[in-house]
Image 1 (cartoon, rainbow, N blue to C red):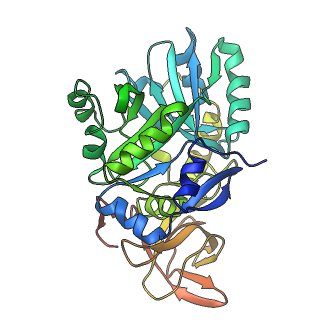
Image 2: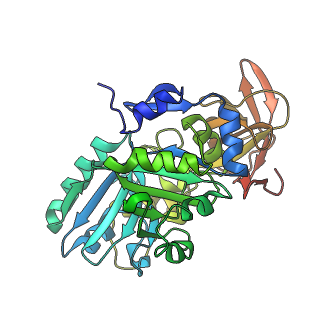
Length: 366
């Protein structure tokens, strides 16, 4: 049974092309994926991300629990509303999911986890929480709309109650706060996103989601589907769970070493495996590839290096760059000349550091 967000009828009324995404009926585009991509890079676009799962954690030992549950350190969260990106690992150091943790009080934290991993994540979190006496509460009554682009913040600020505007305007990156939206609707506004552009991800009661979407559209924010979201996040160098990493891949192998905090005296799940892997030398690395010739890089294509074969993880035509880019996982070590097998043809690709695009512009060397 495919699930629907509260905005489903709104997408259909706009003529969206709908697809099954992790068991959810979601818009892939509203006509032109490329135009929606450019709208986000150049102005402001919005995405229905209500399929994401919001989980609230409550209890006296919630912080201790999160110190055990995730690889990054929640000790970094000192200020109310501050957010942290992290991976949740299994005992082998494989990634169960990547998620965001919000600090809402000493005994209250909020998690936002991926839609496709909802059941698995909830079962894992509840199992681990039992020993800490932490209450795990899913919040299905919330919807979420991401508003992204160079003009996104200004367009959202214009819809907030004038009392809240200055405070939300000052909100730093990776921080969130409560505010009142149109007609006094309660919003949880986070300065986060998955496009490489500035903007907000807004948690709103599902009962107000359609009204918020319509107010954003009236303010000139362009509806954008999952197709544009995918090319935007790839250009921005952001991993997609299930494609770029999963339970067989450690953060070291997914270029997410920066999310691991090996702080003293903290025994998080998967730590011993990560330390062993680091000591033995990581055997596979994740790299960025650019194809300067005509052609498209796609998930599953074979990558040929001096050290053996790898494969394309996420790959696509990048509208901002007008060429194909990809993430690939290849054997560690000096790769030599790198080639990709595209239907039997070996095409040379450039190995680059990503992100490929930052603040709407190609990064150096791309």
